[in-house]
Length: 143
Image 1 (cartoon, helix red, strand yellow):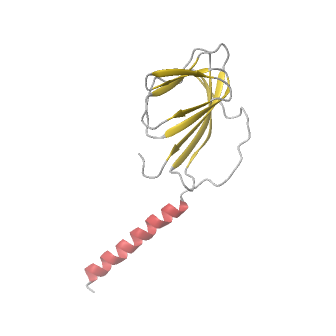
Image 2 (cartoon, helix red, strand yellow; image 1 turned 90 degrees about the horizontal axis):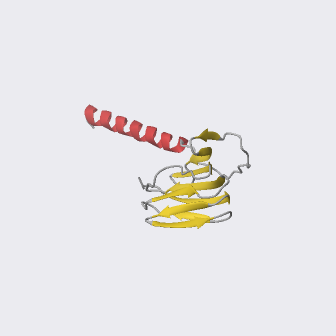
Image 3 (tube, helix red, strand yellow; image 1 turned 45 degrees about the vertical axis):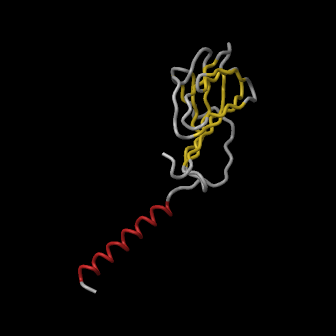
Protein backbone atom coordinates (compact mmCIF):
# COMPACT_ATOMS: atom_id res chain seq x y z
CA UNK A 1 0.00 0.00 0.00
CA UNK A 2 1.36 3.41 -0.94
CA UNK A 3 2.09 5.94 1.83
CA UNK A 4 -0.66 8.23 0.48
CA UNK A 5 -3.28 5.47 0.58
CA UNK A 6 -2.15 4.42 4.05
CA UNK A 7 -2.43 8.03 5.26
CA UNK A 8 -5.93 8.35 3.79
CA UNK A 9 -6.97 5.10 5.44
CA UNK A 10 -5.65 6.21 8.84
CA UNK A 11 -7.39 9.61 8.55
CA UNK A 12 -10.66 7.95 7.48
CA UNK A 13 -10.61 5.49 10.37
CA UNK A 14 -9.84 8.28 12.84
CA UNK A 15 -12.68 10.44 11.51
CA UNK A 16 -15.16 7.55 11.64
CA UNK A 17 -14.07 6.74 15.18
CA UNK A 18 -14.56 10.37 16.25
CA UNK A 19 -18.06 10.49 14.77
CA UNK A 20 -18.99 7.19 16.46
CA UNK A 21 -17.74 8.54 19.80
CA UNK A 22 -19.82 11.73 19.45
CA UNK A 23 -22.93 9.75 18.59
CA UNK A 24 -22.38 7.44 21.57
CA UNK A 25 -21.96 10.43 23.91
CA UNK A 26 -25.25 12.09 22.88
CA UNK A 27 -27.52 12.30 25.91
CA UNK A 28 -30.60 10.13 25.45
CA UNK A 29 -33.35 10.55 28.02
CA UNK A 30 -34.05 7.47 30.09
CA UNK A 31 -37.21 6.85 32.12
CA UNK A 32 -37.74 9.52 34.77
CA UNK A 33 -40.35 11.42 36.79
CA UNK A 34 -41.04 15.16 36.77
CA UNK A 35 -42.87 16.48 39.83
CA UNK A 36 -45.55 19.16 39.42
CA UNK A 37 -44.04 22.41 40.64
CA UNK A 38 -44.15 26.09 39.78
CA UNK A 39 -40.38 26.46 40.18
CA UNK A 40 -38.61 27.34 36.97
CA UNK A 41 -41.67 29.18 35.62
CA UNK A 42 -40.75 32.19 33.50
CA UNK A 43 -43.31 35.03 33.22
CA UNK A 44 -43.82 36.54 29.77
CA UNK A 45 -46.18 38.94 27.96
CA UNK A 46 -48.98 36.35 27.61
CA UNK A 47 -48.65 34.51 30.94
CA UNK A 48 -45.85 32.12 31.86
CA UNK A 49 -44.01 29.03 30.67
CA UNK A 50 -42.01 26.28 32.38
CA UNK A 51 -39.70 24.10 30.30
CA UNK A 52 -39.84 20.51 31.57
CA UNK A 53 -37.59 18.73 29.05
CA UNK A 54 -36.21 19.03 25.53
CA UNK A 55 -33.99 16.09 24.66
CA UNK A 56 -33.58 13.00 22.46
CA UNK A 57 -35.11 9.72 23.61
CA UNK A 58 -34.31 6.17 22.47
CA UNK A 59 -36.86 6.47 19.62
CA UNK A 60 -37.26 10.23 19.04
CA UNK A 61 -34.87 12.85 17.75
CA UNK A 62 -36.44 15.17 20.32
CA UNK A 63 -39.15 15.07 22.97
CA UNK A 64 -40.12 18.51 24.23
CA UNK A 65 -42.47 19.12 27.16
CA UNK A 66 -43.40 22.47 28.62
CA UNK A 67 -46.23 23.89 30.69
CA UNK A 68 -47.88 27.13 29.60
CA UNK A 69 -50.25 29.41 31.47
CA UNK A 70 -52.20 31.87 29.35
CA UNK A 71 -53.77 34.98 30.83
CA UNK A 72 -57.42 35.62 29.86
CA UNK A 73 -57.73 36.82 26.27
CA UNK A 74 -54.10 35.98 25.45
CA UNK A 75 -52.47 33.75 22.85
CA UNK A 76 -48.82 32.64 22.95
CA UNK A 77 -48.29 33.38 19.26
CA UNK A 78 -50.04 34.04 15.97
CA UNK A 79 -51.22 31.02 13.97
CA UNK A 80 -48.17 29.12 12.77
CA UNK A 81 -47.08 25.68 11.58
CA UNK A 82 -44.09 23.43 12.11
CA UNK A 83 -42.87 19.97 11.15
CA UNK A 84 -43.17 18.37 14.58
CA UNK A 85 -46.47 17.23 16.04
CA UNK A 86 -47.74 18.09 19.50
CA UNK A 87 -50.41 17.41 22.09
CA UNK A 88 -51.83 20.06 24.41
CA UNK A 89 -53.50 18.71 27.55
CA UNK A 90 -55.59 21.30 29.37
CA UNK A 91 -55.17 21.33 33.16
CA UNK A 92 -57.42 24.32 33.89
CA UNK A 93 -59.26 27.06 32.04
CA UNK A 94 -60.84 27.22 28.59
CA UNK A 95 -58.90 27.39 25.34
CA UNK A 96 -60.08 28.06 21.84
CA UNK A 97 -57.95 26.23 19.31
CA UNK A 98 -57.57 27.38 15.71
CA UNK A 99 -56.67 24.52 13.38
CA UNK A 100 -56.46 25.06 9.62
CA UNK A 101 -59.35 27.54 9.55
CA UNK A 102 -61.63 25.87 12.13
CA UNK A 103 -62.02 26.89 15.79
CA UNK A 104 -63.13 24.74 18.73
CA UNK A 105 -63.28 25.22 22.51
CA UNK A 106 -61.81 22.80 25.01
CA UNK A 107 -61.73 22.80 28.81
CA UNK A 108 -60.02 20.94 31.67
CA UNK A 109 -58.99 17.40 30.75
CA UNK A 110 -59.40 18.11 27.04
CA UNK A 111 -56.67 17.21 24.57
CA UNK A 112 -55.69 19.11 21.44
CA UNK A 113 -53.64 17.33 18.76
CA UNK A 114 -51.68 19.56 16.37
CA UNK A 115 -50.64 17.61 13.26
CA UNK A 116 -47.45 18.29 11.34
CA UNK A 117 -47.44 21.37 9.11
CA UNK A 118 -51.04 22.43 9.89
CA UNK A 119 -51.72 26.07 10.75
CA UNK A 120 -52.70 26.36 14.44
CA UNK A 121 -52.74 28.38 17.67
CA UNK A 122 -54.66 28.64 20.96
CA UNK A 123 -56.29 31.53 22.82
CA UNK A 124 -57.54 31.66 26.40
CA UNK A 125 -61.22 32.53 25.98
CA UNK A 126 -62.06 32.15 29.68
CA UNK A 127 -62.09 34.69 32.50
CA UNK A 128 -59.32 32.94 34.49
CA UNK A 129 -55.78 31.81 33.56
CA UNK A 130 -55.56 28.62 31.52
CA UNK A 131 -52.75 26.14 32.18
CA UNK A 132 -51.90 23.35 29.76
CA UNK A 133 -49.12 20.85 29.06
CA UNK A 134 -47.49 20.86 25.62
CA UNK A 135 -45.85 17.63 24.48
CA UNK A 136 -44.06 17.83 21.14
CA UNK A 137 -41.98 15.24 19.34
CA UNK A 138 -39.71 15.06 16.33
CA UNK A 139 -38.99 11.74 14.66
CA UNK A 140 -35.50 10.91 13.35
CA UNK A 141 -34.80 12.34 9.92
CA UNK A 142 -37.60 14.91 10.07
CA UNK A 143 -36.49 18.54 9.84
